[in-house]
Image 1 (cartoon, helix red, strand yellow):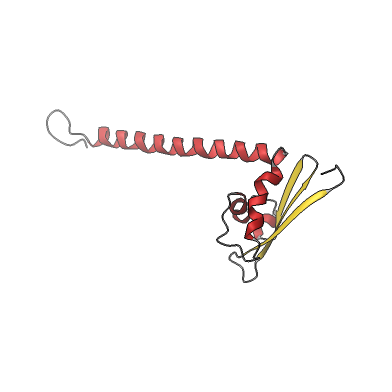
Image 2: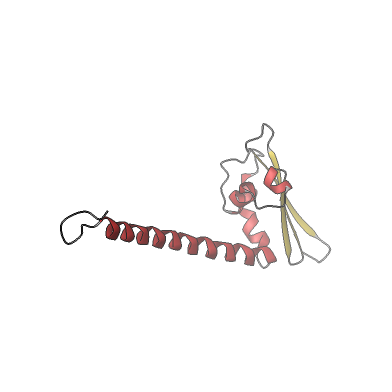
Length: 124
């Protein structure tokens, strides 16, 4: 692909609206972009329709081009989006670990606070 050529993949995803959303991935030079016509996409937020496709999830795909979903990750390889996706995955994993640790510490505190006092009476 030359600097002036762009690669485009388009999909239609069924969401909460009656009409499917249009999702478009574009790669030009070292930049990858994706747009979606859903509410979140219209407000320049990351939407589930784009992340589903990037994850290979075609459950909401209604455009009939599921074979092209496999082309998305190779298409963004080496782009600015590839690094951002890796950072997001790292942050999501760290969040899951933190949630587990938080739950563990809450349970430990609950055990301590609910433990009986030395005289056998529950704490007030």
